[in-house]
Every structure is written in C-alpha cells, then in structure tokens.
Image (cartoon, rainbow, N blue to C red):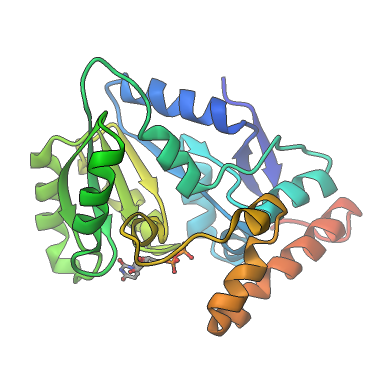
Length: 247
Ligand code: UDP
C-alpha cells in the first residue's frame, strides 16, 4: 500500500531515499509498466493550473519529492514527507540495485550525443547496469512511433526520459500503454549531469536546501521560472490557513 501525502493537490509518496530505491527494485520484478516522476516546486505550481499535468502526476506509481521546497511545503501543511528524494539521486542509487543479471536501461533525451556520453561514463562506474539504447530528445511528433519501436526492441527494463518537465511526463503518459519496459522515470536534466555537460550544486548547497540559489547563480536566465519556488511556499502557507483551495 502506498503512503502518500497530498501536497497542493499532488500525491507525493512519503518515502525515504532508501524506501524509494526498494520500490524501484520491486517494480523491476513485476510484469507491468510503472511510472515514476520527481516533481519539484515548479512542477507542482504548474500542476495548479495544468489539470492534464496534475492528472498525469496523480496517476503515477511513485512520485518523489524532488527538492527542499516540496519537503518544506509538506511541513507547512503538516503532511510530512520524510526527506528530499531527487530524481538524480534516485536514479544514481538505482544504478546500484543488485540483481542476478544486469539491469537494462534506455536513455532518452538531451542533445545529440549526451545520452551516449552518459552511458559511456556510467558503464565503468556501475557494473550492474547495461545501457541498451540511446536517443536524443529533439524530435518531431511523427518520429514518436519510431522512438517507441527503438525502445521496445532494445528490451530495456528501465527507460529514463530526460526531456525536461512537463514534456517528459506528458510523453511518458501518452506512450506508456505501448511501451514494453518495466519502469519509466522522468529525469529532467540528469543525463547532462551523467555526461559531464552540467554539474550538480556543491554539497553545501544540496544539503542545506539551497540548490535553487546555486542554480540561480549558474543559470540566471531561469530567474522568472524560479519565482515559482517562493510562490509555492506562500501558497502552501495560505493552503494551511485555509485561504487557498486547490481547484
Ligand atoms: N530536452 C530535450 N528535448 C527537448 C527539450 C529539452 O531532450 O525538447 C532536454 C535538454 O537537453 C536537457 C533536459 O531536457 O537535457 C532539460 O533539462 P532541465 O534542467 O531544463 O530540466 P528540468 O530538470 O528543469 O526539468
């Protein structure tokens, strides 16, 4: 049974990183596709207005709290989620899941060459995984059937979709019924990080809920988009006081 907390209309799993990795492991052993998304404050704010996105998130098999903002909102709302479980850390930890065989991954997303570069770098670090296919994330709608074929014929267990939010969540939702994988995870810019094209915030920022500050410093053009974070916290306070109702 899932233990979820309603955070501004989104059912976030109340799990630690350790539990989330165990859930990934259990999904691999089942004969059905499972979806995992990693909403942060920005995505939850988008889902206030975008009801299609909200529905996609709420139909997922696991939603982890990607970011200190979501954990903070959970405290404000007295619906406690134990800790931040970011998409990048969840996938990285999942690379170490031990099975009696290699776990097959398909990397979909990023600029041309990024998925391949990520696969090459991860191969030596994680002997328990095999990257059985890669596809860049720049394509037109009529290429969708071809992409689905490529993924299905690779016989991957886990599909990482790195198209940025909410494009990746929508792509997974619209193709999940014809995909033959066990798990689809929306991972944002993770492949860029695995490929060494982008870097994570230093530990000080990551451990103190200040990742957004580092990102603002590195990518100041995201300023407008990032204003959703304080807005999200204010909405959570209003929701706690009964002054904001989720539609
Ligand atoms: N991307 C893609 N196809 C697109 C748009 C974006 O593959 O049509 C990739 C982009 O190259 C980057 C990732 O999606 O690797 C988005 O990263 P970002 O950090 O902006 O996403 P977020 O984690 O904020 O959702």
